[in-house]
Length: 392
Ligand code: TRP
Image 1 (tube, rainbow, N blue to C red):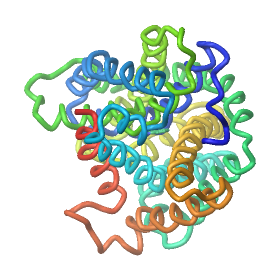
Image 2: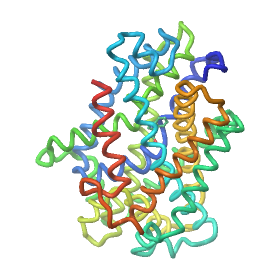
Image 3: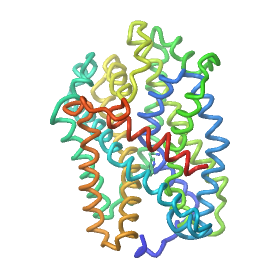
Image 4: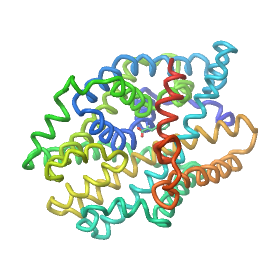
């Protein structure tokens, strides 16, 4: 980071696209729908939107402003405010370190499904039990995970993020278009109406503290808040940018993609499960279990599935690149290592820690941390514990 001399974004669009590229990712497409399904559908959606436009909005504005004012990255920015806040900077930096490994595990799942559809495996992927068989296998998920994180590391090491970001400027709008088509398709299937109702109409009897906690954790996650990312982006911003207008655009994009992903996935539980609503509780595997069923019932299922997962892979990559860069710059700042050495160290660390999450559903499934599989545990500690503390 330091050698880059804090280059500035050329214009407001550049800033918005970079921040949106970091915000829009698996959080929107993979995490949001399974949480919405689990925590009561419409009521979760409502609480989430309310939180995002109030707390989320002001937090993002203040993070960006903090970065712009101090022109520093997270750790130093907090300590500039007040020496006592230094530990917040450290906590905030711990979050991407925890997220990157398991994020890459999910990224690997996406890559696997992309290849399955590319090779004409739509019918197979749509079968019950296909996903659970895949993630509980001893070797295959680990291979996809390692491939994914190596791809991320190569992009970071070669410094070709700009190219990926450029590609994603074209691909992200495509993702929106394809998502609309798939969501409309799901919505007109028999049985979908009940699912749409569940997803959109708030049922206040399902409201609980858990709904709020889950929605808040998701808001931090999806908007990349409370982990120094937005502070870093803010530090590249010129003095005269209109922060509030930019944040509005980033939030609209982020909400739109999450909402569409939910609309594709949540009602499909009602369409394809034959009335078995316990499937709403599936958790992290929901997208990988439901979407292949949706695709397989469509014409050109392999093409639709392949294109969809390519787009998701790009959304995921732009986020994991940004995550990895954050971690690398923390290592660089702290240990004064070169960028290359830091990147390789981060890669090795990520593979080691991510392997726990990866094998946590298979060979290591006998181990649980506070009753959770590794991946769920890392997800919980970062989004539901550390981030709220930093944000407060
Ligand atoms: N917001 C990203 C998503 O929705 C995930 C994420 C969380 C992230 N924190 C981040 C991405 C920090 C980049 C940097 O998928």
